[in-house]
Image 1 (cartoon, rainbow, N blue to C red):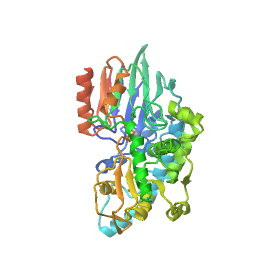
Image 2: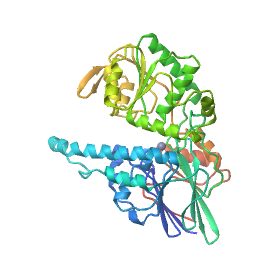
Image 3: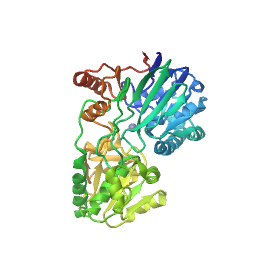
Image 4: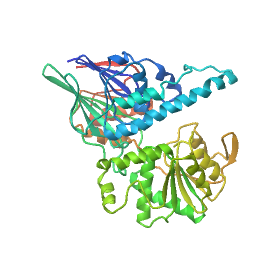
Length: 468
Ligand SMILES: [Zn+2]
């Protein structure tokens, strides 16, 4: 038995997921995501350890940019094979990859001029990592993979995709490699979600595997319970409406927006919040919500029950989905209290900046955070209580009420990751802890070792291991 496994991303860091498997004369990538940490972005330009044209296939666990965002680059470099993903992942990955290409093309138009003006040089070439044309080629390579059925990838290699409960369409992937009547299984967790989260199903129980790669984003801590979210949301909405204010919610386009709609729809149905005009003001969130509506087969039991009662999880009375700039601009003319959900989730760009300008100076309004705010982002600065913020070169005093609801997370916490691992049953030959900052990854490795007694390793970037 000889299988080579190389960690070409998300090894002691969170983004840039990319694992290379070489066996039976075939080369396969599981995920090929973009690096998003500022210090690691130069790695996006690094060539793969093997020529792109020598790859047989790419398998995608899910459609987040840090898992699929480098795929178009491989098309540019000569990859011609299939990209396997579940149907919902393929639908969302298409939106994400095209958006990523567009952003890079736009960014590069201004970058060189700005750098010349500021006397700076860039560590990156003055060209986009890939173009819209490359992203379109990547979209053409997408092939639908069914859930829980083996798909033939290469000679003696099959892959099966299992629900990961992280975002819509997300999966863990189990590779089965057979050589001379002997088989080994490699399980890639992808990003593991939480149990009892709205709309999507819980992470699947997958069963035995010889080698396991498990994520560890929150491997060193536990989250607040999912069950606390509706009460907290109703409380914020009602207090703001009593003041006659608006609720402005910066939100990620994928999953968080749809989750918010689910909670608002239920609270309205239960009579716990008043009927309000609500807006989803993000072209990407509108497109992703349409993907949700196309795949009701992926909904969990509580969502199916909702649909039987005539409610839709991504819809509520008084909701407007705004795509165009004119629709977006018209929102500020509404006289009554409104709920405005817009991107980007950390207020680093997009339409949320306009809604912040229109709302943050008035004490009647609420800015409600429902997601992680990275250090240095505008969202983080607001959350830290800055008295005045800068948007589009102008200063705006922060008078609105600033609130945060904990418990929203697309990632399993430490206890939930152990629960996911327990689904494997008997001890694997080795567990590789990936997709976590060094502290979280090592802490979780320690936890697996003490709690399960399983052999565990935290690989380094570009480390290669031989599996027998
Ligand atoms: Zn993810």
